[in-house]
Image 1: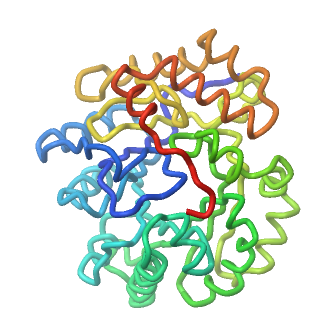
Image 2: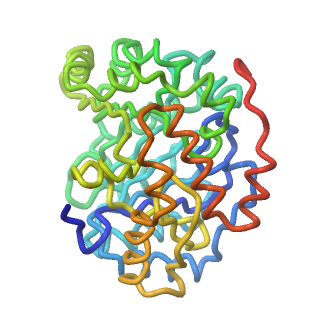
Image 3: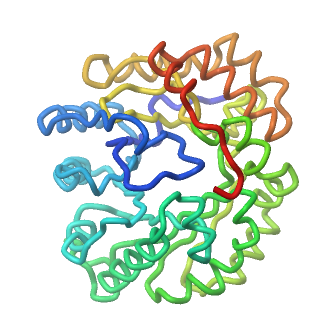
Amino acid sequence: MDIPAHPLEVVWDITYACPLRCSHCYSESGRRPARRLGPRDMLRAADAILGLRPRGICLAGGEPLLVRELSEVAGRFSAAGVPVSLFTSGWNLRPETTEALSRDFSGVSVSLDGATAEVHDRIRGRRGSFDRALRALRLLDEAARAGGARADGGRPRFGIDCVVVRSNFHQVEELLTDVAPRFPALGHVSFGAVVPEGLASRRGFAEHELLSDSQAALLGSPEYARHLRSLAPPSVKVTSTDNLALQMHPELIRRGIYLPILQIEPDGRVRAMAAYEGTVGNVLTDPPAELWRRAIARWHHPFVVDALTPVRTMRQWAEATRAIDHHFASQADRERIGRRPEFVPGR
């Protein structure tokens, strides 16, 4: 097992503010305080994240486009030579925003969890979110085909990111055959099995919306990945994953199947493991090398090892998540977890 000296990627949920109410939301955004830093501290946090020496940085949320300082933060990263990507629902993307995105980001992914408004809007919790996502993709497509505003003259890369749950699994292929061809400059479509994290770890969600073990295995198989690629336009890169690398299962870590990334909460707190509650410090106050050391120590903590070692199924993964979250979460986070609404299928 060869663990890198630095995280390969940092994912910064730059705000928990969000116009949507996604049933699978990993961060419970839109349902809790935004916890967004002020402008000065946001740039301090950006500099501290660079101190972690990641190969890439992803800005997510919540909805990053609600952050006024987004362009300045992204510019801080790109000026340091670190590629920075963006994940957005596209809800409030406007024509005037696309130029800045083309300039500041190496890639932009729009979340699309269905090939139809009926499926996507139900999962995303707000009517009209499908149409808004398609509008965002049209704007990005127009910018890409016009050449964008990147200083290197390259076209900004944009694509679709789909969280695959049981109730949209049947539309995976339709996203490639019906939606992807609408955008000639589309660069990628990524399918990832929903991870039992945040709201997706609830017992009701685990029962009704987590993929079955056979569905997850199919999504992670090379044969199915090749089949999906055959359905998409030739210029579109298609990837699919079962997301088991996020599980941080002791055996998978020994085999090198894990993601050495750090997840940063909006106020700079650092999660030890991206898919689980429990922080190990703050980028604004703690040395980067120490944060990474603490994160690695958490992967091997006896409670984590005991909770994850027996896991063999998606349902068992959700059970282990709930145990790990309760053990390592702060008291305030435990109270938030206790207030989570029950998942009701079809709503």
